[in-house]
Image 1 (spheres, rainbow, N blue to C red):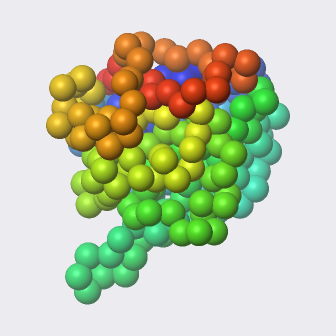
Image 2 (image 1 turned 90 degrees about the vertical axis):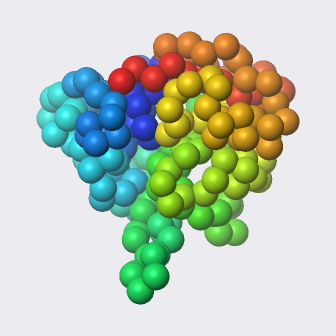
Amino acid sequence: MDITWLGHAAMRVRTRQAAVVMDPTDKSTGIDMGRPTGEIVTISRHHPQHDFVKGVKGDPIVIDGPGEYEVQGVQIEGIRALWPANDGETAEPTAFYILEAEELRFAHLGGLGQPPTPRQAEWLAGVDILILPIALPGGLDAAGVARVARQVEPSLVIPVAYSGDRQAPELKAFLEAMGLEPEEPVSRLTVNKRGLGDTPRVALLECRG
């Protein structure tokens, strides 16, 4: 499985069966993710920075809500979540996604606006790889995101949705709260079940955009 960070919360995960683009973003983030190809697109929030489907090359199958799906051999489960409401507004429905492929269980929490409920935490239990946005406007702060990671206890954590700068305050706060030294940033991360190891890790990806 190959994992690439396209910018903001956008990710591209290539399995042997298919390429999945998660939370494709438009240029309002200041990032150009290019034109990634994908057979599957998952959407956590209906917001231009998370649902820019027309920026994905090809004719992908779009998954934009809770449910269980199987597309080209990739098992996908969407878990209902909520984005916190501003004063006088209604909370926005969002989704977390769990992918299963190549003996790996992989979660992308692009819609992480508040801590997971006990029920959501049950769904996330046993995740091997956890991708977390650490600096979404209006979402959890870096320390709050770290608490989520410690609760889920994945083998590998990948922080995203920050500037991409190794010295970014949000990244520093997240790493301090995790109490782990990150690995050196890479442009693409290749992972398999046997290579995860027994010690929790934080992997940094270079932003492609």
